[in-house]
Image (cartoon, rainbow, N blue to C red; front, side, top):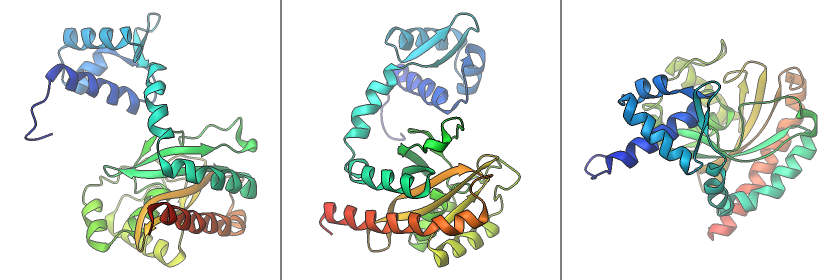
Length: 259
C-alpha cells in the first residue's frame, strides 16, 4: 500500500475482517485491538459498524466476534466468476469419484494457497479438514503449495521462497529451507507432491500442478483425507488419477486461454 493514500477507517475495518478470517474461532475485543494495534474504543466502533452490515457477528454470551454470513454473499459472485472454477468443477467431481476422497482446487495469491472449490467425499462427512473453500494456507506445508513452488521458474521460485517463514504446524512440517528445496526437487521429478500430515495432524494430501502455459503453474488440484485411509499403498494407487486430472485440466485451461 506504500505510496497510496488510504482512508484510515476503511483500512482498519479491512484489517479487522482479515484478522477474523485468519482466526480459528471467535475473537474478543481485547485480543483484536491488541493484535491490530488499535485503540479498544476505535476497534469497538468499527466492529459495531461491521456488525450493523452483517459482516461481523457479536455473541453477547461470550463477548466475542466472528465473520457474518454476509461475507459469503460477497465471496459467491467472485468465486462463480472465475472461469477456472467453472472449468474445473466436472474434473473435481470425477476425481472425487475415482479416489473417494475430497477433491480440491487451489489458486495462489500473495505467497499463499487459496482453496476456491471443493467436492467433498461421501466418506468424509464426519471428518472436518482445514481445506475449506476460501481458506488460505502456507505453501511450504501443503501439497498444492509444494507443486506450485516446485514448478515455478527458478528465479520466481527463489523470490517466493524468500517471502516464506516456514512456520511449524505439526511435527512433520518442513521448517528448513535446504530440506524444503530438496523436497521440491523430488516433487519436480515425481510430478506430484504429498502433504504428509505437515499442515494438520491426521490429514494427508496428494497434489498436482495445473499449467496455464508451458512451465507456468497457475493452480493446483489435490485430494485430501484422513491419514488412516490415505496410506502409502493407497496413495500409490490413486496418485495417477490426481496427475491425470491435473494434466487434462491444464489442457482445458490452456484452450480457454487460447494457448
